[in-house]
Image (cartoon, rainbow, N blue to C red; front, top):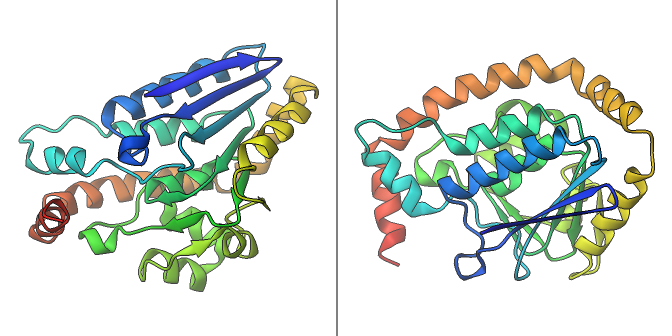
Length: 246
């Protein structure tokens, strides 16, 4: 479900589960996290590109996976957060191409990458509160940093939907292209990075992110506990059951 290939200094990852709008399962998170770790430690890789198959980035966490975790008496540590930590600890530049839906973690993961290229009609939405949950992936810190506190509140609490152009205007997206061209542009960005001195790139990325890294890690831990609590709540179970009946 996660495809990968490498060529000329660029490591490419494709989320390929179009029949479920590329919704992410525990196994898929594990694959993504492991791949990011390997690529980051590969001296022949200067850039990582992540995209989705079938004209969709990802519909977010698989709801059946949420439901299973909510009823598990001994849940395993979140594979989604392990993937986010892999992104946070990745010194290699990461570029994401977004077409179509980028829901939940499909949006919050973007706050931990370096360049986001989106199609004009991409749709960004965080529906955590609607599901009886709370924001995750350290987005309670990274979203205000990128969008400002007021915009972040609209997005995280009200569940506002942003288009590609909206997302660029508020700082979530780096650049917007015609629909269907996000991956082409992302690969062009990656090719440019692939030709630069590797250690200079990595050191520069570390310096750029250093001022708020500690805040991000602290937020990740705060959210982890509350999210787990909320996942077992009646509100969340009712919301998941309602969606299952649709």
